[in-house]
Amino acid sequence: MAKIFCVANQKGGVGKTTTTVNLAAGLAKVGQRVLMVDLDPQGNATMGSGIDKRTMELSVYDVLLESASVTEAAVLSEKCGYHVLGANRDLAGAEVELVELERREKRLKTALAAVDADYDFVLIDCPPSLSMLTLNGLCSAHGVIVPMQCEYFALEGLTDLVNTIKQVHANLNRDLQIIGLLRVMFDPRITLQQQVSDQLKSHFGDKVFDTVIPRNVRLAEAPSYGLPGVVFDPSARGSQAFVTFAQEMVDRIRAM
Image 1 (cartoon, rainbow, N blue to C red):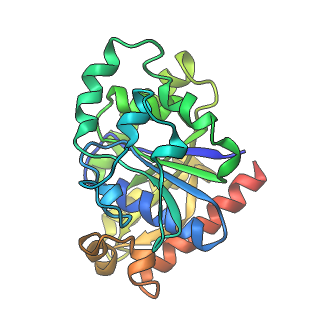
Image 2 (spheres, rainbow, N blue to C red):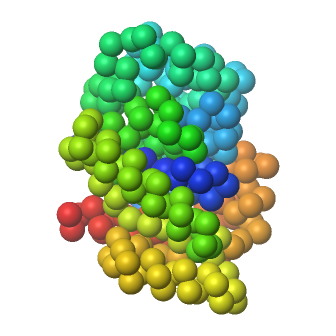
C-alpha cells in the first residue's frame, strides 16, 4: 500500500519543489517505488524531474477531470528513477472547472487509489496557496511534510498551515496529520537560525526530522539542468542530506 504525502507550506519560496523532487530521487535511490505528483500549474517539479511539461500528452489536469487514469498519464523519468504525474499551464484552468464538479476535492484521492499497489511512496508537490488543487492533495494524503527555513516569518506561516491541516482533518480527511518538519536551507553560522531550530524542536519534539538540509549551491543549480540535486551531483552535501532524509522517512514509516 502506497504512503501518500503532501509537501506543503503556505509560505512561498521555502523549497517545497526542491524538497519534493530530491526526496523522490532519494527514495528511489534507497530502493523505493515512487510517484511524484505535480499539483502546481507552474510545473517546476515536472521540469525539475527531467520531464518537458510542454510536450506531455497527458497531465494531472486530465486525471483530475477524469479523462485519463494515473497509469495512462504518469511517465517514468529514467534519469531520476521515479514516475512523474506532471503539470503544465492547463492545470490553472482546473481550478475553475473543478468548482462545479461532484467530489471536486476527492478526485485525486480516487485516481491514486487505483495505483495503490504500484508504489511505495506518492509525493505531492502542492502550490503555496490554499486552493482547490492543494485541497485535492491534502484530501489524498496520509500526512504532510513541511519544509521550512529557520526564520521568524516561517514560524508565522507554520501556524497558518497547522490550522489548515486541522480543518481538513476534521472535515475531509481523518487520516491527515503532520508527519514532520524538515529544516531546509540551513546555515548553522546564523544565530537566529539556530534559535528558531531550537524553538521548533522544543515545541514540536519528534515531529522535527533529525536530518537537516544545508544551504547548498549545487541543489540550487540543479533545476536549471532539469534534474534533482541528488541526481545532478550526488556528492554534494545537500544531495547527501536528502538521501539521508529519504532513509529517515522509510524508517519512520516502518515504525508507524
